[in-house]
Image 1: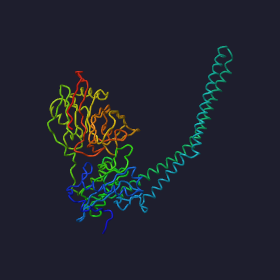
Image 2: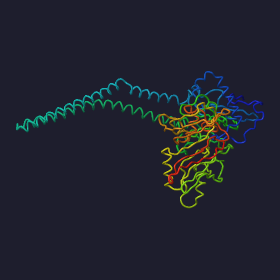
Image 3: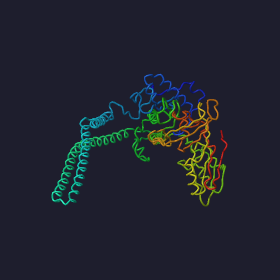
Image 4: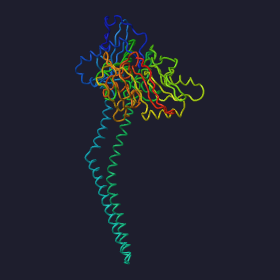
Length: 539
């Protein structure tokens, strides 16, 4: 039976190709050549669909799965989310569960929730509510004026009575006048309090109605979300089934995030299992413009997302022979390259691909290696960090006191750092400064995003050293020290818009990340001598 969603490779496509022996580890991979070929075919197909052009220009993640059935090798294709307001397009595999089906429960309940939203919007913008709000503001202002004016009147009247008392006048009328004015003041306050309370009560009744609608909306939304997740039944390679609620139950977030199960990767594996295709390799790539905050480049491959897909794929891949996590094959302990040491500080030249400090991976770190040099007494404390993929100088303090002093130097920007990088393109500007507000992407740790609302300021000076073969050798002088600062400043459109070669997070893979912490200059916190340390760049 012909399957229009299975795209068979031709003999020419497969000529000289070697089929993968292990399935792709989806969170850190180099795309298999057949995945690259498949992605090119998908992009060619997308280019032929002119009616999708505007939507695709907004940006979308696509995926390909190289599969085998009987003697045929081909690929399946998928898009994340929906395309042209539909989950069902013949070229692509269908959704795990089609939310947009006319016969499903999602749309009717979505209409109910939308109706509640309209009631809330209509109430919040209603002329009656606005009139009450204006009346309340006017009444409060008028009350304040009248009460303030009467206070001034009472103060003046009291001053006159005090003068009359001192002149020997009969005080009985004065006491009576004082008592009357105090009583009148209370009556004035009461009158305004009651008038304002009536308006507030009317507004409170309206607020109560809005709160009830919002409560109903919340309950309906939560129930709908859970019902959706229960309908996303995910297969694994053994033929076992779990819904999303069960898959995420043991994760730290305990519940699936919105949009879980709608990415390309789960769709691809689900369709393969349901139709007896053997998964061989998988890759996901971006088409269109980059989102405003994230860094995505047209045609570039990216790892599967962790927040939505990692628990799903870890379940769905059970029964497949999967490549090991390449990060767990990082170089193990070797002799430390110590470039400076005295009684207070230790500076190490860290190789690329080695952790600065212990992480989730069961691999050795520079910090552990350094601390093993000091089996007794105080353990050296790392002062700052480098990404696993970055090489270069790391500073350790040999006591808590020196550690605090060094951290204070970094915090006050009294440490001059110079990094060398090679960028994947030509930078025309000879030098300059990049300033972008960065914050963690909570859905994709440890990725950073540019956020002018929530980001913290980051500043980097740069100087172009050489332009050669469509690459730029550049020196970075970071004035702040945020996570991935130089990598984002290089890759982001509001920065240099040219990623560092080998940046698998914000650019494309290479044999290494071409970023090296070459030198540091600071005043020694104990001896007060200027320290200048430089290490040779390995590229």
